[in-house]
Image (cartoon, rainbow, N blue to C red; front, side):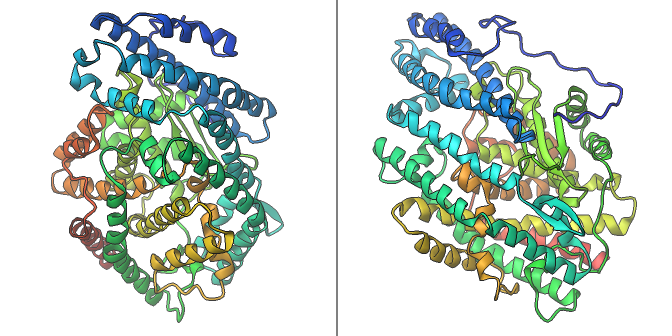
Length: 583
């Protein structure tokens, strides 16, 4: 189902990493064929520095092959949720392979930690890896293996449910993603009608989604208790390897966004209300152009989107454009929106091939262009780290991965004339981007703060959950946008957030990275050459240093204080005001 342009290949396709341990023609099919490699690693002595380093390298190679195999199985169920064969292969991996691998992984981790030569390993090369292994040993609990398997399988129900949602528009059935682009139309009554249709369709599955979340909540809390934690929040923080910041830092982030960013969002919405000449600004008024212009359409076909993206990225740095050209030529892009395709977008690392895969649902909107710039940042990050021998050095934490992606959205803005030959349209696109940069931060804080409550109050009722959600939602919502009469939608807005169901607590990273991206962009505006150089150098570090050191290499701080957030917010507001005054 991969998207291919049919364009003649013009780029040199990089070769997959040469295997030194796993036979070149070996593919993962059954546990019986995979088990001998684990037995070998489990039985092999690692009592000298040389044998230990070789063992770590071989284990990393096996891990990379497993990672890529599981990645393709995930890709195949997302590009076509009706593919029964793909679903069965994915299910086999999760239910049969994963539990057995998980047990062996614990044995191998303990073997590594017990090696008499562990302290002889080069600290610069192995520190991050050893830290993660020791953390995994501390967290392992055999009773959690079947629970983890159940949660992984059950959480995918969210994507399946949303992939099947469509609404009727002018006699045609549209995916919710495609229908969402109609919220940019100038006809206000049309926008309002689409807004109601989308949310009414989501409400049809409210009961199913509530039951699904309750099941996930129960199993996740049980996993936390099994591992000796009071709640899943604290368990998840450790399992995510959040060594470089704390729960308190997240609470400070919430506070900084509420006090320093939300007022800026209110200002933006106040301007929007005035520009649109509205007595009441409503949720369906938030995406339409404030000058009454028709929605921006930066491309007509997916082919055009890809080619213009390559050109745009190449202007910023030649290697950036070449990365997407290689992925295009290899068929590692699936970008169009269609029924049966799961919602959302992602960049999937492929650690053996060395060339990632981008998945998204393009519907010819400005947001599609922005999404591809974002995922291109992830892909470029993967290319810049592909030559590390250890897979652990390429598995960057989300706080760094999202920094790469969100920064790319901002750095490419100077070259968006590739998509817009009209100066007025180009300014509109930049204004929309910068508005989004600020407006997404309160939503990120909303989702994260809600999850802190969810998992530290595991015995809550659906009614209590609804009440707390509404309290947090109102805390971070713009006072200029009037929500009255829409409470029946607002009460379940969190159902749309895939992360809450599939990857709990993986969301605040977007906010942290957004702040970092603003800081890099500010630095880039002051000194473009140095800004790009430091950005690339930071990405090249992969995960070989703590998060703070990687941010420092990019020329910025890993900081959530009100003072720092206020500085960044004011900078974005000033850039926005300058663009608005030029219109």
